Length: 255
Image (cartoon, rainbow, N blue to C red; front, top):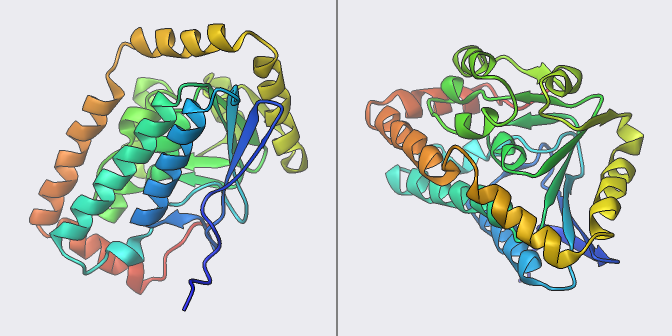
């Protein structure tokens, strides 16, 4: 029997602008296959000479709730390795996409969502967007690498230790968000920035993306991989399984 799951992600391309939409109800918590599918699509679009810019957006209650903990819980170390590799692939695909990636964020942006947004080139946020890393409460670590690209160092540390979320307006004050708009205007605002980029020389823009990655002070791939090692340690110590069990038992999901 054919799967009833909707294609993931959904992509539309028009006038050099590719819009990639994540839609995994109820909260856009992604499984291993989803992370890889997203990575493959972003890399495919980056290689397409007709594409000049990518908008990464989402449907539903929020932009991204990170990893699907229910898929991971109780499945052993192999499942943890698989999901970490899948997240690494997706975050890397955003960063290495050959054209600029604009993240259009609404609602919750948590965990893996921070990995996607932190590696994007431009962030547009709805006024209802909130950003956070609840990894410590999930018995894991990761994406502080990407959060550090959005907020100052000491705020990043406080957010990791406490799990605190910040809103779009606060992130805008720190320079992590280019523009904050009403929820109903989010996709239009992202498309407007995308159109401005798409109107320029595609050769120059692709060169600019490559050059900007080349002068980054932090190797995001190595840094994130280092963080992931501590997730393995927490799991071996039993902390990871305990935290994930508590999350599943509480039917935890973003509000």
